[in-house]
Length: 277
Image 1 (cartoon, one colour):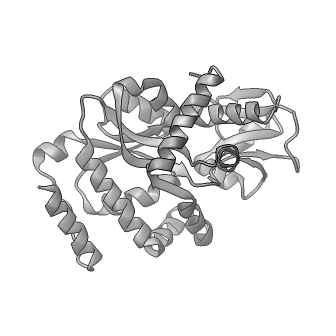
Image 2: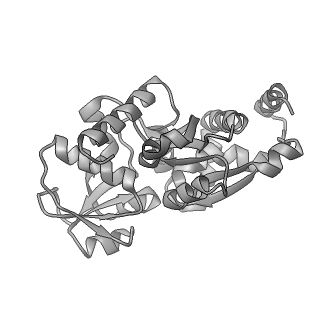
């Protein structure tokens, strides 16, 4: 099916028709798409999952990198740090997960009212966020020791230290119980004036997933135009207040534009300056 025909099916949906995407066998049988099993991927994939025959595989960010690198999936959002380290072997696309300013789901929470110089517990599941925290600490002259833990659960992390870096859905839950003493998206924006790209869609160099990316971008556009429906379904699925979910979806950028590219390039540059890459 041509991209022009896919475009028409999206146009039909906009007009209220129940359009459904179908792909030729070579396209659907060979291409497997990765999806973070997190709230931040709910809006981008909402329309696509309900209107396509593509095989979509959920995984956490750490698992996703392994699946992509080993050819088990062909296109997926992957953590920015992994992309930076391996970009000679990868190609990237338009879909991304970036914070405009605050990110809400990558935060340091604390048992105390403020963040002092005591250690911060972190999980090795999130090298992008851990390295971003290292950069923020370096730029702000902070000397907190980072203590790595196997678990990413906030209660496990706070059992080790009184401050903890939490990410994703766990961070969203944690911020409703504990005090947020640092939002890493907000800190990055204050330092640079740029969005922070946490994940970027990629494939191996020998895979051209441009059609899939274009289709996912159209799904994103549909989700943004139909925010009420997406929020309503997400609120039921995740048992979270719809007002918060709408705010959260609106804090994120899902398409990599010029500002996001500059933000990603600067993140790579600062990783190198800090000796992280």
